[in-house]
Amino acid sequence: MTAPAAAQTPDAALAHARALLRATPLIDGHNDLPWEIRRAEGHPRDVAAYDLRRPSPKHTDLARLAAGQVGAQFWSIYIDGEMKDSGYARVQLEQFDIARRMIARYPDRLELALGTADIERSVKRKRLASLLGMEGGHAIENSLGVLRAYYALGARYMTLTHNVTLDWADAALDSARHQGLTEFGREVVREMNRLGMLVDLSHVSPATMSDALDVAEAPVIFSHSSARALVDHPRNVPDSILARLPKNGGVVMVTFVPQFVSAEFKAWEESADAERKALRAAVTDSAEFQRQLDAWRTAHPAPAATLAQVVDHIEHVRQVAGIDHVGIGSDFDGVDYVPVGLEDVSKFPDLFAELIRRGWSDADCKKLAGQNLLRAFRAAEETAARLQRERQPSTKTIEELDGTSAARPSS
Ligand SMILES: [Zn+2]
View 1 (tube, rainbow, N blue to C red):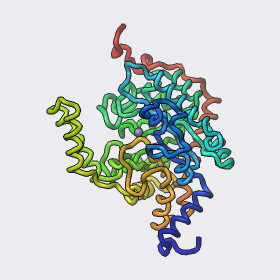
View 2 (view 1 turned 60 degrees about the vertical axis):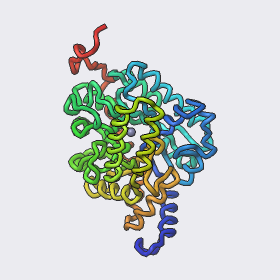
View 3 (view 1 turned 90 degrees about the horizontal axis):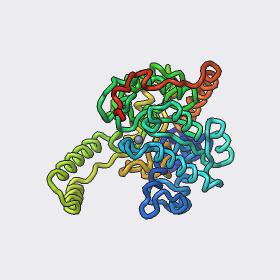
View 4 (view 1 turned 30 degrees about the horizontal axis):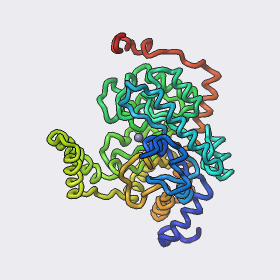
């Protein structure tokens, strides 16, 4: 590691990146593999049939995780926010079960991690530290007891909302019913801080981000979001929020989702969406609908998002929030499209090679790779230890705090 960054050939930068990721664990904030296993064609929910020792149909398997030098992964145990009537608890518990069976199936490769000490132990043992992150506060069904039960099952972050606005929090992609968090929503954040479950602000509206930062007693994370100043997508983080991260200590884990990192891709997605809606209204036959949609897609190919654009977002977050508040949250297995150069979990070293070519120091690359997340998580654990000495588990209800009983369907 002697040549100045600019003088390095692409291969030298990649070799440098690989050496760097051997010395410091890469921690990725978001991978949707458990949902892929749930909906696998022909063998849904079958952890054995979705064999990670073989090449998988999507972005993630053991060989590519090793090639990508992934040291720790938050596996998303996402559940759909629009399945209210079928019961969130059943699906959420099944996703815990799928993820935990998946981790247990490869004891030589994966290890369940419940905190920073576990991450460090697994890295030393050359196992992929496997953490569980819940995606969507709808899962707790307005109950702090349910939140605590999910913590006990291993959830170490919860995204406050997915795409649907809740009784207590506004989502980025839905209507603003509360202008942020309700009082019960604030109590959810306080209880997560008391438990030591990271508060994840990806998917929430800017007002919810702001309210959560106001009440948070521990660092927050964004498990998979990019910079709104570069691509004006509601899922991205505005500069006004990025600027508050130094005080909070939190981390924005920049995501690779094409419509969040490329303005051209976002525009294409919007027109594809409009086309789909128009076709659905005009064409009743489902085979004909699909034929026409495919024809539109052939005539209008998706523009490529690129690795360089992802790096632009990383550099923007660094510029506004600071080098101590940026991380990586790929969203592999949760997306249909990926940027050129970041096609699957084997490609993380290529991302670091580009940073090295742009002049990033080893120390800064290591912060981005995982040291920032570890620091924030450790601070959240320390806060939890203190809060558990100071206060009991909250027994507050949404009816008490928000007076919402009138809004609930009477039985
Ligand atoms: Zn998501």
